Length: 128
Image (cartoon, rainbow, N blue to C red; front, side):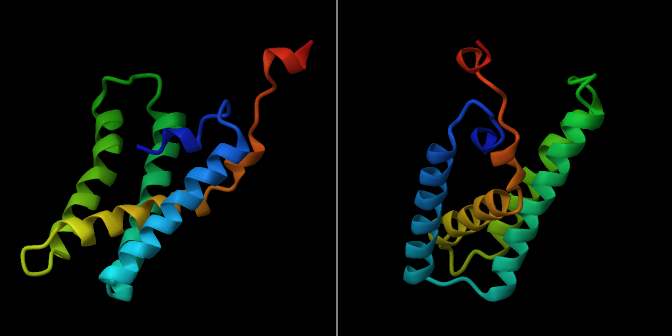
């Protein structure tokens, strides 16, 4: 879902533009129908759990990508996100709170992983 943020081939400017687009969209959705602060913190926590699960996948479960641990680490953030979306559904409306929650999760991933800007691999043109 947010693999572009971890890709070293994506330029820093493109990452900043995407981050700004996510922030603006989330702010507009918040202005339309604000979530409660505890719900926002839960979505931010889901973003942090996404980062932890991704780190564990890359460092502990990459050797066996078809194994149970790899699949479990892949589905934990998705299941948690869906549970939060359905838990904060208000009077049958799921679109605005769900999109807003996904936006807060994406913002958490982008904000709590600033090292993705520093982990740049030199291109083949830079090596020559």
